[in-house]
Length: 338
Ligand SMILES: Cc1cc2nc3c(=O)[nH]c(=O)nc-3n(C[C@H](O)[C@H](O)[C@H](O)COP(=O)(O)O)c2cc1C
Image (cartoon, rainbow, N blue to C red; front, side, top):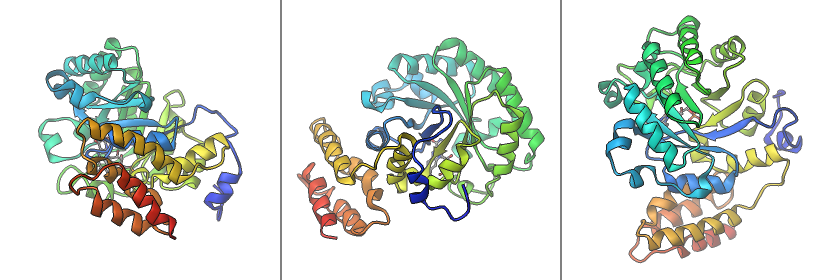
């Protein structure tokens, strides 16, 4: 990205000149990227890879599969993120997810929560690369779809290129199909998961060095990608970017990314909402609560005139007795006044 370029400049440059395989993905986010959220994101970007919230392999094997794994056909390409550390259990869960129709199995090696540490999975597994490699190998044997790993760049005092290098070597040896690297370490003691996304500084330089050292491992950069300029910048080096909080809080970024990738004009926010409204209508008939769908669209007008009125109308009306998909149309009418 040249200094001083704006999102308008970048958008006006048109479609990606290089490798069209560059992917945009929306990060797995617990409590956020449920199936309703993913449906909404799909309307904004037709090719972005959408990730589920993390699901423990044990839950996949023993739990209510339709509830945990069900998704709408329009969500493809959709990846399921698994948590766990037992290769056989992971392989069994991966097989079930493949049968369910998922396009990718992703293993979580980045979550620092205490609950996850007690279960000895997530970020703490970075210090057991051989175990993770066995998990990846077992899953790869069990399924024919890609098996990928989402990792941090280190944990606690294991904050060096050497540590990450040996982890990635083990993943490469296990045949990982793609590595998603969240460009900050995880601090396992004393920080909450939220602080672990803010306090350890982003260290892009380390990920760039890994990119150069492992040219054959498809690598996706994650962490702090919040603008179209960032996406354009990282597309020069990486096979993709994964967007987390910005995609949720400012979902319009996905529409901008699509316009940039395809060289197409931006769609209208209202037409996205009209499409989402048909979905909401069908889901309400199945007993889904309106609020559990409208909560994901609150950020659609971020930074636009009427953004406050939009958010306010949705939050004040979605939970009311008898509220239905008309709430979306009424909220749009509020924005139209600005
Ligand atoms: C609410 C929330 C929940 C998250 N849950 C998960 C998760 O289940 N699995 C995971 O690998 N990362 C999880 N993350 C981390 C994101 O996937 C991502 O790595 C992180 O937010 C950094 O990317 P960003 O700067 O684009 O937000 C979560 C992040 C947030 C904000």
